Image (cartoon, rainbow, N blue to C red; front, side, top):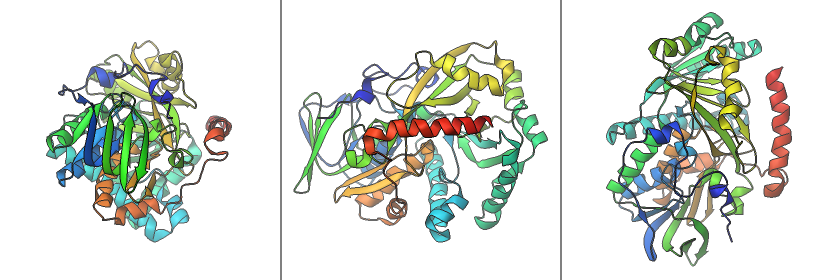
Length: 438
């Protein structure tokens, strides 16, 4: 029996966390509770970007779709993250060329570019009000990384035809960010950032308008697959029968399917939001209102909100529980970059559970003939998880080309399997945290 510890360890049932995103969420009509037995063509577990995008794209194709979300749509990492819509995959293209060869690396780049296009197209098509802004600045916290940033930007320009990225030297970086913490990097104007919860709510509204049936408060306890029929059972006694199943649970999968869990591991990430800073200070900190992601292995990622707050993500933990004081946990990371914010009030601090894989590439798999999964976006999921929904719709409809490109990336099992993955990761991350300081 599946015990949903990750769903309840740090949050109240059916309630969004006390985050800046929840406080500024767009109004949307409530979704129903699952009652009794239901049937459909395709049942989806998980109401984040993967599940919502799958529901939308399948419903648009005429499928009868039911989506089950344990809490609220966008409740998990999809509604809590840094909101960055980045280019490429989680791994850089030179690394992918070594992993899968040049031809497949180019296919992976093209798929990643499609993921940004899908996000922008959905925002435009469904008039989703989610504060879209262009630009991500990749900032090097060590001088020894700068030459790689230069050569990698040139590689994307010359070998991948990507003209929206350019190298940024030390002086320009410090003018753009108002901090002496960084030594150079690159600016990607083809990438961007958004309010992730409002984007998720927009997807949910669009899916509902297209005919998908979305149920909140539907905690799935188990599922069975017999004779080509999937039966999904929920904590409150509801049952959904379907021809096909999509698992879109990501970091909250827990023990629902060990075949996925041994390759996809949850970790916790944290964000704080300051009080509104005003136009002058905001422009001093991030001159061009782009998002920032730095070169630390445990990455700092930050940007300005629509009302000129600093939204700063930093630090992570492994296991089930969040720190007691998230604001105090994240603030030192922010002050290391921006010591001038030491007297600024922190209005919000929240955490979320995402999922990583050993190779930091998403795990796409056709588990059985009628069961599909995509997860483990490793901090690069806003665009890729949204595209995953479209890819799932293709796969369910019988078009496997993009699904197969993603699924052909071999995702290793975590050493020690599900039981020992946490202590193994903690040991590894301790080493990387030391490396960040060197």
